[in-house]
Length: 389
Image 1 (cartoon, helix red, strand yellow):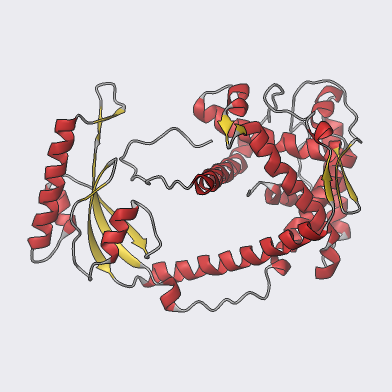
Image 2 (cartoon, rainbow, N blue to C red):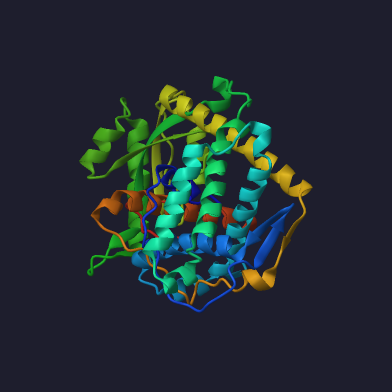
């Protein structure tokens, strides 16, 4: 689960972690209680709670403003066989365990904190503690020693990333990464209702839309120049462009399968999906720019796989135990966390929100993979489902 530790590590290194960052209210706890042991390391309630509250605030800041839900409604929704709170907490605990594993193996990669980093982290932690009231510090474990511990772990994690990914094969032949390019028109089965919102067409309207798509495909197939842009403009339709290979599924898997069988400058039939119909023109059997981008993605995946395999190996070798009772004391649904912000925070907040959205998309993909589902991806003009959570 991709989280926001990189941003926090960079903040720590810059020594700019803002005092007064988190606010909340709650009862006193023992912040030194052990939540988990990872090898010979102990994860305290304080470190676990500080990280969990930081992440809670990011989730709530993004999703509640997007959906209008209360934090309780958001966290208590059902997800992956339980509440979304439990799902997120499982991932957060795994990430925390990984942080300690990374520190335990840092010497193998000659990774250590510099004096300057230690100084900046200590100052950031001290400033945070000094700038928050006791009540808020109790809620988020906002005391210097826990913040400092977390920031040291996060900074080591960031410094471990590159050396752990070194040595992978970066040679990717064209045939492995080759991408084709396709222009297409989408005939949606949705329309704008009287209230301005998207709604499904009637059966008669869908039939008419299907006939329109089939005629468009036939006319384009029989035309001499196969000018999909001109044909679409004449019918007041929009042309989209996509690059793909045989394993692609977007915008719709059956449409991609049909396009993959074409020669250059050939046209598909009207391919029907639940949400509408697609007509496409294969514009290139080999898109160099997209192929180069795919090579970079493949290399990134290889590096990530090497990184993940190392972490998995270390997890298998380490003795890891979790104190469920102590970890269970950290709940999100009934303990709100807010991040006061001003104009200068907008840029960072937007970046963090984008990362949170990416993370949610990854969560959705993971859940769909487990369920064996693969939802059709729609163009922008199709009716969008509620935001993924």
